[in-house]
Image (cartoon, rainbow, N blue to C red; front, side):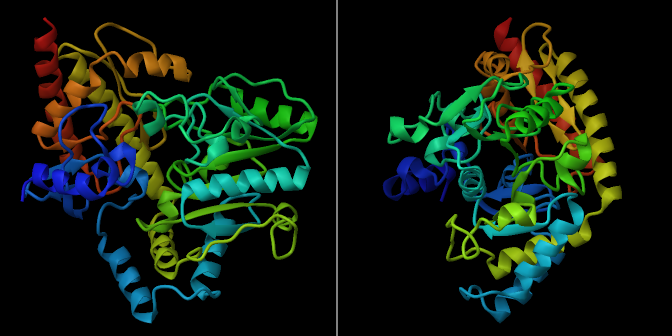
Length: 425
């Protein structure tokens, strides 16, 4: 069967033919490719076409697809049972690994997704402070819970939505939206400020100098809690995440993606004092049948065992060189590109004329909606390179992307940019 046949079959039984809107080709046009397998930096679709993959499950696969050691860890765990609804040694081991790597993180609770992690962290912040209001930033995405979906990035922005139908006014009444990279003035009604320490759902926008420190100081001034949504940055920026990278610690962390080794996972954590508000010890209720799933715990632990500080440093250096060469390759072919970079994270903005890298969502949106990304995306896909099907996502370069793969991507980008530029002449 072809990709089109699978997509038509999917649309008959799955809304829009996809189980997450970011996987659709709504913002770029065309038919999504349906993946049947992946290996390292590559995926293969139902038609047998092999793509160099810069999606990598939106950052979940740090080591690449089907890494042999991670697969073996999952296999071993599955032989012992897939879920129990009871405590397991695996969740203790992975929690110990997270706590040992992140300064200030004393306890964590596992959930099954980044959405659950952010939702639960906000509930905990409200329960611990006795306050209701939460401040988030325009273009930052913290999952699809009602109160945090307003003015979100990623798929919300790709579909041109300000939020979501079905979310009541009451659900967002206590959510305040501020522009990214501007420290808001808080008052004593604010329970928490939640932020992506590196905004990676409006393409890539780095925190301005002093932004995170300013948030920390403003939260301290009024007694609010600072929450880092590190579902993307956690254990991808480095061993200790954004706190170690920038030297500014939050009160609560949200994790996901990397810590599940490619399986569904999320976690939130902080000091033992704050986590003490959670049931069964405290009054803030949170639960999950599959939380701490043994397979996800085993896969996540294996990834963290295999990746050390030298690996992160090497990856960051490789991404730095790739980013510079990608700008040059696209620029020499008739378009203008900016590839902002924070450690191993990289974005991609395109334009017809010179521009500065965006500092907030309004600037990022203007570039994302200039009509260049969709034709560039398809030109890359025809050359065997798969980017995310939306201009608000980033490039996930992982440890499986070696120099040959990055050179292949540069060659494809040069050709794709030339093709797009020719249509504009």
